[in-house]
Image 1 (tube, rainbow over the protein chains, first blue to last red):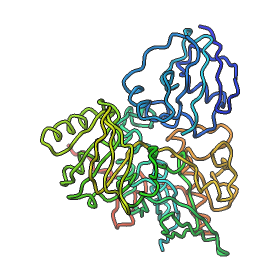
Image 2: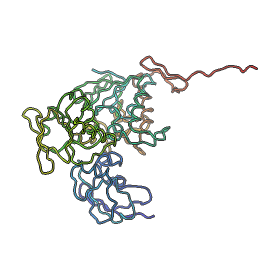
Image 3: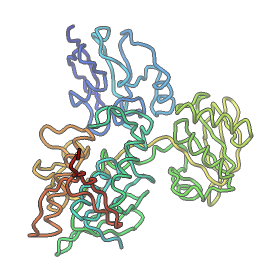
Image 4: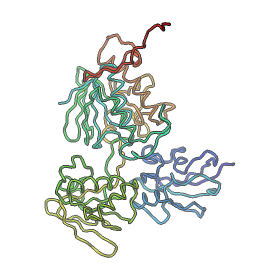
Amino acid sequence: MSDIKLSIIDREGETHKLTAPTDMAMNLMEVIRLYNLAEEGTIGICGGMAMCASCQCYIKSNNHIPKMEDEEEAMLSEAFNVKENSRLSCQIKITEELEGLICELAPEE
Amino acid sequence: MIKTDILIIGAGPVGLFTVFEAGLLKLKCHLIDALAKPGGQCSEIYPKKPIYDIPGFPEILAGDLTKNLLDQCKQFQPGFTLGERADTIKKDNNGVFTVTTNKGTVHQAKVIAIAAGLGSFEPRKPKINNISFYEGKGLEYMIKDPEVYRNKRVVIAGGGDSALDWSIFLANINAEVTLVHRRNEFRGALDSVEKVGELKQKNKIKVITPAEIIKINGEKKVESLIIQKEEREIIVDTDYFIPLFGLSPKLGPIGDWGLEIEKNAIKVNTYDYQTNVPGIFAIGDINTYPGKLKLILCGFHEATLMCQSAFQIINPGKKNILKYTTVSGVDGFDGSRKEAPKSVIKSIND
């Protein structure tokens, strides 16, 4: 398996082009943390259980991403700043389908 | 004024284990936590989720880990200041720290152990006009003493475990509970959802979904709420409004205690996890050092080492040696004693 390329727009609006491995069971929130694109303590607070909305992001490319499960949908229904293209990045697994993904971090609540 | 040996900021797993390790060294602890109950994230965010990397426990629910840690440290009689946030710190000429909470409770200790995880949990507030005016005037974000709500009218908003669990609890002490949630589906343990369904059938809880509270009315305190349910607006008279939309952690006032901070964490040395201020230690997720891993098990290790230095600060010059609990047993401050049973020495006769 190979690495994929992603573009992440941070909370200041800056775009970061980065690579992520597809064989390390990582999720998108973890990649964002790996590259320190959001301040520690402001993202992935629950660790990645869809139990907080601190890793909310907006998907801006047309990549195929598996549908939300109930937990994610329920959490987003209680979150702030939610848009049509909102997802919890901790629930998005890094797979080859995400090649070229563009995603923007939602503002800190 | 509360006086203790080690004042622990944060009653999560690492703070609780500190009580045990300190107790073995005959040091007394008191804990302050912004939440109304001990356990930190383990009891607030994910009590019903399993943890698989606690040594010796192939699998343990976070809530059960909290319960076990409380049981383990019980004989060392820790004190608790719950539902209050440690706000200010001062050190006097004798090296004694005074920590005061946002509610004005004063604590004194020679050693401070900050085990505050990601910081103190602050409630996520719904976006309603004038909401801050009603805080403490019928509007509460946290239930500290449920008895206050006995026989009262209470509106709870939210769709997670705490909204469900408190609705059940308050309905059972005869509060007139209305539960309001944005969706028809609730995000919580199945048995809690079912229990709320049962209470609804028995008219003990009123459930309004999909709906949202859009306005609070009342001249001096909360008197009624305007709830938007689809296209309609409903007015509900109530004594209390409790929005339970979860909590988000903030480093908060600790950030102004003169400690070296890096990426929202407190810098410590790896000898004894002391900060740049002698006598103040930081352990668990709140600290940072080269190679730091935010794991409960690492926090336990940090707590253990930290207590050795705390002993020296509290008892300068006093000799001390590491004891094994299997050999020495555990002497509680409550007079209890735990010890390994003596081996039987007996000859086997023909």
